[in-house]
Amino acid sequence: MRSVGGGWWESESEILEDGTDYAFALDRAEPLPDPRSPWQPEGVHGRSRWVDHERSDWSDAGWSPPDLASGVIYELHIGTFTPGGTFDSAIERLDDLVALGVSHVELMPVNEFPGDRGWGYDGVDLFAPHHAYGGADGLKRLVDGAHARGLAVLLDVVNNHFGPDGNYLPRFGPYLTERYHTPWGVALNLDDAGSDEVRRFFVDNALMWLRDYHLDGLRIDAVHAFVDLSATHLLEQLAREVDALEGKLGRSLVLIAESDLNDPRIVRPREEHGYGIDAAWSDDFHHALHVTLTGETGGYYVDFAAGLPELARAIEDVYAYAGRHSPFRGRVHGREVEDLPRSRFLGYLQNHDQIGNRAMGERSGALMSADALKVAAALVLLGPFVPMLFQGEEWGASTPFQYFTDHQDPALAKAVSEGRTHEFESFGWAADQVPDPQDVTTFERSRLDWPEREREPHAGLLDWHRSLIRLRRETPALWAGPPAEATFDEGERWLVVARTGSRLACNLSGEERLIPLDGAGPWRVALASAGAAVLRGESVRLPPMSTAVLLLG
Image 1: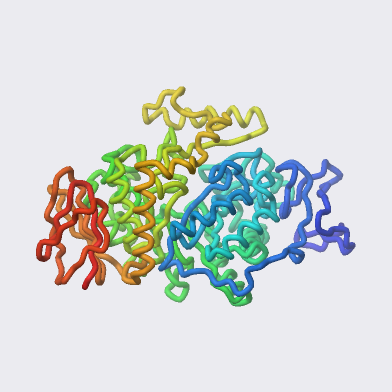
Image 2 (image 1 turned 90 degrees about the vertical axis):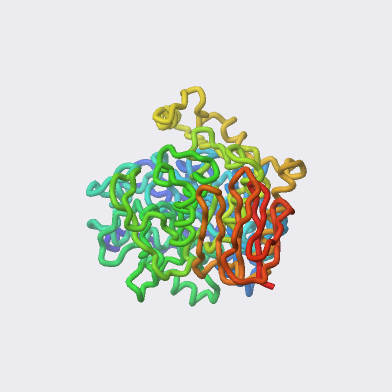
């Protein structure tokens, strides 16, 4: 190859064709994988394999994804979603997701990472679908199969750090900078010398997923860890280029950010001096809902210790902390979202982080009753935000989702196992109570148990989720978008979420309650979790720990 300036080298000989294995030798050293490798069949340390995306056989011509505002997102992890743990085995369960009624499937990271099993957030080959999942062709079959069933597919991408094992990028250029540090070590170089091509690397990666794999959008992990003081933030650059690609492809593409900054500028349109990202996760709603239904107030949940008042605030204002002092952070946190559509925010009871960040990986089903799970599902699925479920949540899966890895480097494997134990010492967890991430049984415990859906209480929870999603789909007034009003009585422990044309009444107490609906009817009970909701004028009587959806007419 010959140098063409700016750190780039090129070869004009046509040495690569589909299926060719290759590597780069820098300064006559050992061969290294391509930083933009499209496939790593032998893992992060092996040679790269060329993929000719033009040869792919697609059947989704004319595909148009559903709108986020009317949709329901379903987050899943390929390795534990099915017993097979591959892209192809996931296709076998897509009809179950169609029957559930979800519209978007969000895949946890699938790019190459060390070993055969893991969450995917320690990846290094960002352009290569994981070899153990089925590689490039497997991912394309999954996306094509989803589109054939009317399901959009989103992909979680990690642009805030690289995993330590197999990370050869620093050998190729200034991808990291010592100017800043993040929880994972030195930061990615987004604004230092040589950063133009580093930014190009991440933007090109995003465009590749959307263009060559026909994905409908990306979820961008932990954007609060981006350190970028450029005049044009990386998120804005990414949003601009994705918008341009959207015009070329003729189909809608979405970007969803994860951020704990409580900063609405991330999702504010560029013409309003925002970054123009389409939506963002909203942890405040999750935290407040979790505390209200479990009573847990440890760690970051201390900010939501009041429970019900914080939940009502999050429902109305999106961010419960918007210019308020955060006891957990010890400072003022957040900014008001003002008039932004609530369809720019996701609401959820569970996700991979909130489950897997617990020492034992317990789901909400292990922390609250089936009745409480039904109330939570109604608040998530019929609230003002874009709802998201985590795999198995729809039937109250009994399997945990624990943190698991498969590092081949013995020293790294030991460090990860010991680090996981130390992480939970402050929470009072004994070392023998924290599952070893490297133990294969930790991974195996986290696989979904699909047959349990047929048994109670799982079957009843599944029916409830299907009913809620069906009602939401058939009732545009319940789609995400307009703000909601939340009234509550802390002593009586009831909550009413008021939206135009609907009321969601929730009895969170252990006794029957008569709950005022605060609005002129006539109301009718469209759905009730306990089957015994009784209208009394402008109020509704609900059994203990239950909920009812009321519509006009």
